[in-house]
Length: 115
Image (cartoon, rainbow, N blue to C red; front, top):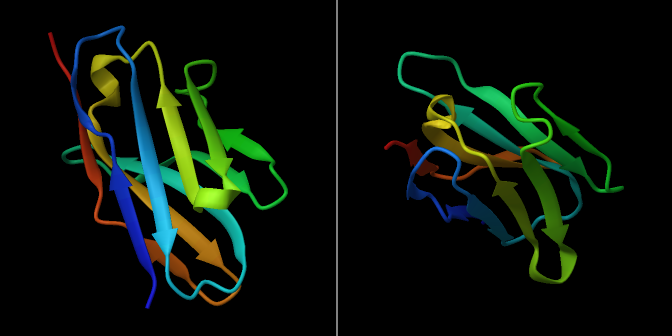
């Protein structure tokens, strides 16, 4: 059984920073990529950032230059460093781990940017 657990969300003021963590455990044969997605109220879930097994990263235009995705292979953990947060970054952030067999979602972590 595969588990994906996000953590690190919270309430932050505009301009502040948060670091999200995504920890995967269980029988995942080969991870192809791990992505962070977010879903704001009344909006569709959107891709924020992704990192492949080869280390290639890609970002949504709205977060380029502010967010950084990285990974610690030894801990099977992917991070999303979020700087210069804006009101519009408020959303539930989800991690998706894609393996050769399937994709696995976490339960999400709330990020609220508010003054």
